[in-house]
Image 1 (cartoon, rainbow, N blue to C red):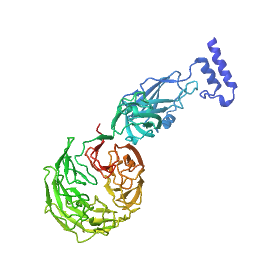
Image 2: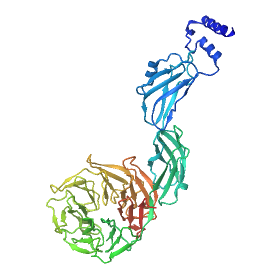
Image 3: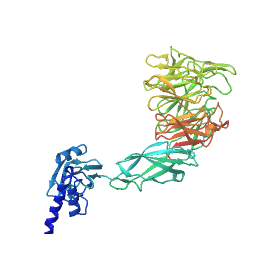
Image 4: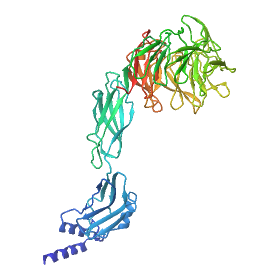
Length: 582
């Protein structure tokens, strides 16, 4: 009897409330509230009867509810879910189950199924009207995607690493560090850029500029399925490693590398040659007494084996040489070849695309304390006939102490220099090998002489290291595509007679150099140009010595090798590797 009276009483009460509360399926309805409190103390909810976390794809789930369901509005449910799920359908099974089917989900991540219109037979809405569906086909990994810069050795200078995960992470913790350089790293903070990108700020306190390793482990980082990150990342940091000593001191010279990877040091105020064979750690003095040349000679590798040496000045004389020689870097033979048509010292030499060699400009005679005779002529050396032929067309301007590079299109780009009175020039010109003519190129932002050029991997030309530059720290760039020269950045220190080389990460390392032709302390500081990114210079720590007028080669693995030069006004016999080798 009591079981019949209570429902009738509730219905009567329901009839006495206002009209807007009479919908039994409305959660605000007094009837539904009373019915819910009468028949159950539980909140209306549905639980999963299928596994919505899967190492595979998902195409359906089954929900079982703790109440009898009202009629399901399948069209509305489809409309609010179709942005996330393709071909989704909802089917009521029995009184209290709901089957949801859709095209398989194959991309890892968390998907929310919306159930806003599902109500119980008493009109209750769900306690949680979204259900997470997690696709989890693989364990997450983390990789290092960017740094600024990771190779520096400054003292407590803020830097950051960017990490990217293979899938969205619910939690990214500070990585655990190990490896030889871990004690020198202090992690400061973490910035979440996105669900799968994270920036870790750190400071460094390196006590040396030697290479080492850092190992990043992600022990407390988890994906959205609460799987821990499975990998660790090892990074080998670039640094300096002491190399073998030269047998004889050399300054204002160029080192060469043959096809075998051997390093050849020749001339540079010492009329001798020595070779560091690949895989060895000792320079061997192969030719202790070569024809006497003090400075100003120029050389180029002809075929990966033979080295052509041209011109220069004998010691203590003011008239340059016309003689040229072939040095066989494998047999170490040193033999004369054809003479140039004009005496040349402090000239330029460029190997052309056809294998011939161009020599241009330079000084024929010096008048100490006043001026020197600068040339505007050029010659072509043919290795097959071992002869020089002077070009009928001359350069637009006489030039010495300038630089030249072979562009990717076969032209020769000629930059700056002086015209005989030690005054820097702001003009450039091109040599076209098809017409064998010279034409003016774009002007430099500032006049420069006694400078260097480096053709970069993108084909552009870096102009740097000028001695005669009106006391400017400018590093300039010739943009080949736009045919213009801009000042790309100013180095922190003056870097006359420095060496610039591309690093494996695309940056450009500036090693050595001096302020106004001397070897003062700033030349110990190594700088990196963040080329193509921020185009700013970064302090990369200290070299072991203040070096100027030195030389370098770049090995096939990206390792840089610096040798010779002057330190404190004295010849420097030491060498340094800057690379990935520990």
